[in-house]
Image (cartoon, rainbow, N blue to C red; front, side, top):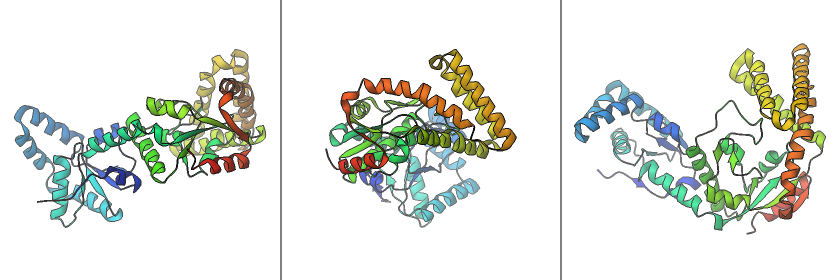
Length: 366
């Protein structure tokens, strides 16, 4: 039986092809493609049992055990999940780790049920190899520009208005500061690299020769940009977004207080505000050395007073005081010092409209 194989990895990226990852959940959790959903042929326990059988009795007996474990009602349920996804996502393709038995068996079962779906040649391993190879040779294909600016200047908001940007913090599920941790854990390093490769390949395929990144360095939380690519990105010229302190306070307040409290309340319910407050206190404590003991105590006291006022009145506006104090007395001196050492790389500075116009004019220049 000759069923379709697919090995145009560029098309998988640029067309954002829906993918079914047939690997076990434990494999998927280590890293997966951004367009993939995990609908495994075998769950973790079944995969482990088959692996043990293979080790002691060989491939033939392991395959027999696999067919036994995934049969009857179990097989029906998994077949239905695959069919439902394929029906709602036209153009779906499937893969396992090496494009071998698991994806071949699934493809045959689906074909027998009247659903013909291509499987990716070489599976996850080959496709990821393509992504890594592309990233490793990408620095000659685009010119990076770094969007800089003091904390709260609205860099991320401006980036989202540009078609030729790469949102590293968004891909990494992290904000670039001591207060950057989110409830949702960051992806694995492998998943981050896969998603980054997808975005880079996609932007270059669209014809962009200049890409804009937020000026954040090699590391984003516990994740890191691959070394060769990182060195190229951080070598870029710098555009500075200048924003008044009042607006910066509003932007930071909205992110650290309003939006963050909503996320915590959605996640923890009635206890959300308590968990948010604990996270903010922990963040303040983690920068104690840089703040100094006296300033640290002052910021903690301002925060606690603001929290009590919010609990009494339901109004969170008092939190703006500690937010502005952190911006002006902690973040600004640190950022200005770091930027001064790279001042020769600044090619433009201005407020939002001027910066947006400048970056739009640069988008197709090498």
